[in-house]
Image (cartoon, rainbow, N blue to C red; front, side):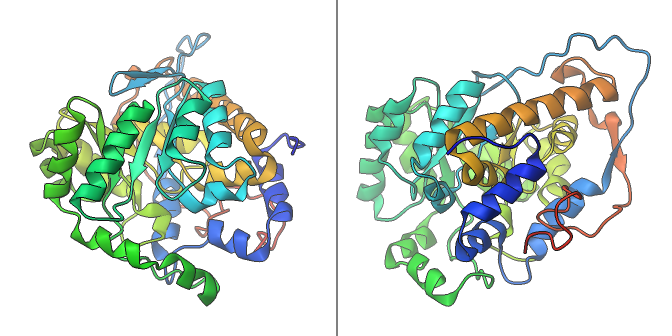
Length: 356
């Protein structure tokens, strides 16, 4: 699968052509009315930049660190589970692209190939994302296996006690994903977090699925190194806030005691810079990652990340900053969106039917 696109618009069209109708709906759909999905996009569109002028921006540095691990740009590849299976080499393609671009990838419990195979695919730091599918002893055994394989960090997903009602999917597809083992997610509590912490020592632990300042404060109280803001791309609970709307209160709640990662609707370099200005350390990409994989596997995702890198650099230069530390909330302000939100509304040059 080669890369034959030069823009993200072309990439999305290629992914559409390569996937079945059900695969397309699985990637692009969300829960029930898909309000949460669209609010993710609307919240980003309702922020405008306040650029500064007459600054030397010839040399722009977008490198950073996440819990001490270097990133060539403030982007991570979100765990997208079943979405990664839509490419021949699954999570290994994601891992290969992450290695090539100097970013971090989060590997989902429900993706392929095995924990050990992905770990061996490349040497860079990567995070294993845990869905709980068994009792405490099951969790201990999984965590020990993750450590033995050489992962740098662990992310515990906490927003999936129930499987979201994803009505865009065919009922038969939903049935295959509502497996009995998922019921173990209903028992995940702070006791589960403590169990994992006891096993991993100083290994970085991310809590993924935080949507309120109250839970962010609890993360800090429990010694969590990174709070990961996510509403599962709108695929779990419908009618929550857009993720970037919650970012300022969560950044204030952690008060520098934990780093903040955010995902949910981020598909452009402008989106990434908005989140960084409001205090995020890094931004996760999910559907954008899936579209790239659908268009061209590891090569497609690598090309997508390089386009995103160019967008971030261009945005920073036009905003008037030359490194990430210069960004702050004064560079953004509330504004009115100019178009209805949609999973593709950031790409106005797609076909008029928006490929749906």
